[in-house]
Length: 268
Image 1: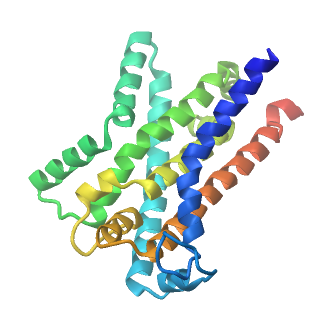
Image 2: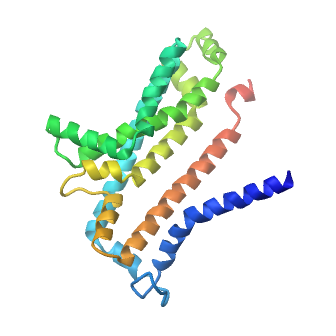
């Protein structure tokens, strides 16, 4: 038993090393004054200063944040509605069909999704840019929110809703004062997952973005094609740290929410 546990820990450590070693290698050389990733000469913040002095890049950062926040907010609302609708389905076969259709966008390759949206926007005459990127990000974020919210809905006992209705609560009051507070951890999880996916997405955005509009992932790819510059390392490091902060923030919010006793547990 001990030997099995030891090997499992070594395997887990090896996986994390393989995953994070390239990221830390990139971050390490973002502080290199030598201008290359071959030899570290001395510590410098020159490349970070170059990133923050680039006006065009700052606009792209703003575009990325606006797209991520808007798409996450809208997809969270739509995901909650979708999860509530799926839970109301009584037939098991119909519910499984809806869940399968919901999961298609998650398991489908991003290249196919991006190409499909590109064809759709071209057919309807929608100009590629802010709107096309926003719609695409909402589309692939909604299924993620549904998967985060639906398990919390399934955990909720129907007696809570019945008790609220017996006390004279309307449908809106049941939704806002019973259902939504109960599934709040799932809502936070869906929002932060959608936000992270939107910030990191490249393949779909690459297809649906237009001239004059870009996001950080597309900009990093474009700059990397023109040659290795340590400003790309600095930009990638900042993006990685921001994403890590989102994950840590979600962890503490979720932990605090789970540890907080509900009204039903507190009692009168």
